[in-house]
Length: 115
Length: 111
Image 1 (tube, rainbow over the protein chains, first blue to last red):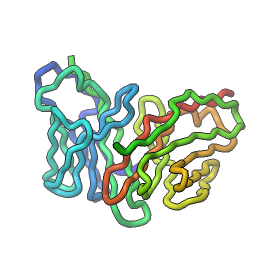
Image 2: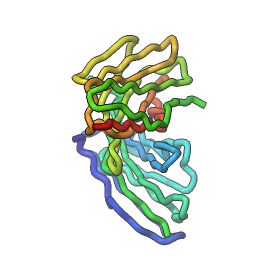
Image 3: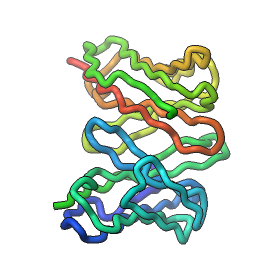
Image 4: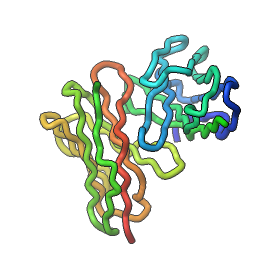
């Protein structure tokens, strides 16, 4: 398995509270991604990073922010959690060179419930 | 908007048969194509990548790409109940852009 961990793996939080999810990789890959997965919607990209301090928005970025201060860590913050952000969140990594260029590898996921 | 389309299924096949999963994409400039398998409650797992027209085989899996028709497929030979999962098609458009994922096809292999 690619060396990707996510924490926490499960979280229940209340509406209006801030929440931070962490993705940590040991592969030294340049690109990191945050997705959410919901029934009927598939995987939807929230934000991604193409290097330390370099990030860009995905298709469902409203209500989320990210930070990447080190190659190995990519943080996703829900600034004020809402029930519509109840979902499973996946982190992924990729590189743009080598035999596995552009292949994305996923972390185990975080199940977030906002009550 | 660049899209990747898959039949949601479920696709039911008997054990030992060939399962055929299909995917179409809208961006003619797409460069790379991937198939992921996702078991219920688990994360997507990369099983095949294909970059040029034709077939690519890996064990019981064959990926087929036809860029002229904007079509990519995955064949699973000798299907097993353990192949029952959702299969996601993903496409990389031009440049270093994130993959675009289809919503997946649910495959059920009946023993």
